Structure formats: structure tokens, C-alpha cells
Length: 166
Image 1 (cartoon, rainbow, N blue to C red):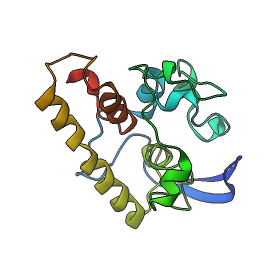
Image 2 (image 1 turned 180 degrees about the vertical axis):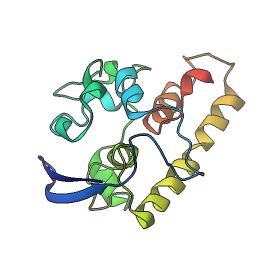
Image 3 (image 1 turned 135 degrees about the horizontal axis):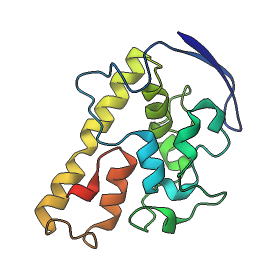
């Protein structure tokens, strides 16, 4: 078990324990198709994510990551902006104080071994509900037509669903 202390632009003095091995012992209902490293390499969130908190996560996640100091939708795998601003996430009550950057921050911390049972269940339910977007792509798009519903495809990547397989 490793204790980690967070001090970055969005969070000061937050401490958590990594109680599980990296990438192991996930809730059986949570089966993401992509790892955080894969997501960062594919291009998510316009490259503007985790930029000031890299030391919290494994170095190899950032070797081929598509990152930028400013949000750039062209860095996303499907070259579209598919994100709402953080202010919208806060307004909708999607942000928990332990993860002020949102779902992907929760997922990265979960992946490296942090467990917070109540919040984990909330986020896993949100992740599971997002799957409906894959159904819409299957219904309205020809398989592998990446020009069809590009924003939905990119949003699925943001939630660790591999939209390249649809």
C-alpha cells in the first residue's frame, strides 16, 4: 500500500492510498475497453488533461500522450471537441471533491489502485450509463464509418469505450 499526496493547480493537500496493484482488481461491473495510457495516446480532452499532475501517474502514460497547454480538438482521435467545460460538470453535480477534474481523474486514480467504495460505485454507474452512445452509433452508422457521429465516438473514448471498434 502506497500513500500519495496531491499538490497541483486544482488540488492541494489531498492524500490517498493506493491499495490495489495498478490495473488490477476492478469491480466486476467495471470493464473499461481502454486504459488511461491508451486514452492519452489516442487523443482525448483536446490534450488539456493531467498536464500539471503528471507526477501522480506512471511516467510511461505520458511518453506518447497527445497533450497541449491549450485545448485543441485536433489532438483528439476523431479531431472534434466532444467535451463540456468543467463549469458545466460542476453545475450538473458530476464533480466530487476528491476528483476535481472529473471522471477521467477518478478513472486514473482507480486504475493505479485507489479505492473509495461509495464514489467508485457512483462513477461506475455513470460509466455504464454512457454505453448508450455506442448503441446510437450502431443504430445510425455503418460499421467503421468514422465520419458518422464523430462527437459521440470521441465522447465514448473519453469514457474508456473504444469507439474505433464501432
